[in-house]
Image 1 (cartoon, rainbow, N blue to C red):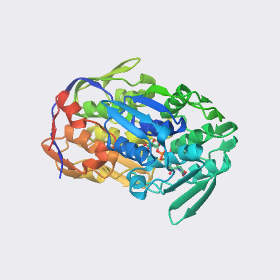
Image 2 (spheres, rainbow, N blue to C red):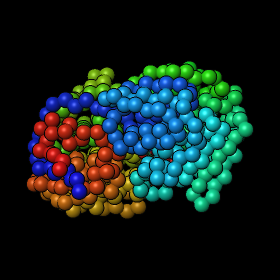
Image 3 (cartoon, rainbow, N blue to C red):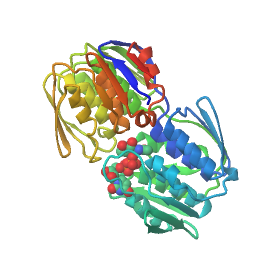
Image 4 (cartoon, helix red, strand yellow):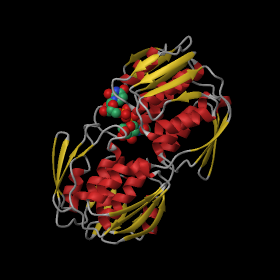
Length: 416
Ligand code: UD1
């Protein structure tokens, strides 16, 4: 069984270039089927979630090739509209294919998606949006059968600004006749990236980044070449690692505007931060202080995905920091492992109270989900002694070459 082995206490120094964003590349790859043409997607990181997405594209009949960080999808050969259960269960974002397949073929068959166990993750908003667009959806024992005689533009109001439901609605709306307006849309940068890719294919989508996204549907799409944006959550993870381990790092590739809440937090915790348009420098002596309550929220609020690594960084901060997780119920599974390292964390429902510990010590740890796994790596870099982390299939879903990148910064970390 593969493990990451970390001897904590080494300062991190140097620059790290952040790879392409997992949460952007997955919907963009799903969107490649809309054009029935060739899409060349650059900056696709080597992640197991990307492999799973490619497997779905291939199952659907697309021809996919990969060279380095570039994935080329030829969707002209798509000849299926079903996604088998084993591919759906690998990751939750596979549900994004629903809107795209439906728009392309008028039919889609798949089962309820998998992904991290973060509590109940319904897809009711996805289904309601597609129904508004004219899909007939039948659910039976976890199986979904969707058909349409033709999608029609409409107004969709999401009751929650769901990232996935916004993306699904955007993809389906590209194949609908007429204009669709998605109200209370998610405003995440990944939605903007998807809009830019769709427009590169010839679609007319506007408003992404605001809470109303407008899609003029029914326009034939064409070949496109696109570069995926950098991963802001990976950037937050590297900043967290340097904050707890101490040192001076430069994180390159992510617009600083996407990380303001993270850099403000580390600045309040006592780190020195400097930022240019797509570069952030963080200097830390490893002795942090607690910060005001951190409450996760949809963008531009504090990202729920950054909560676990940032919490890990603050386990040794002088004073008490309160976290309120408003997005996902089970997003504190890393806390029990952090406690085994000597952290003082009490969880009560959606609130976690972190009292700074004098020090953390190494331990044998198991990642329970993707960002929780990253939190264990962060904590182990700031702990005394050796930690061994298993459950790496979770971490591999969203971090490419994590051990190599941290080792290049001077961390005593390797993978066996
Ligand atoms: C995406 C991200 C994930 C991130 C999350 C929130 C991808 C591949 N994943 O997940 O990393 O943590 O955004 O930023 O992009 N909800 C419903 N009904 C629905 C859909 C969602 O009630 O039909 C609820 C969810 O349970 C959750 C909230 O809405 O409480 C937000 O979820 P959503 O934005 O949909 O997250 P994902 O798209 O699954």
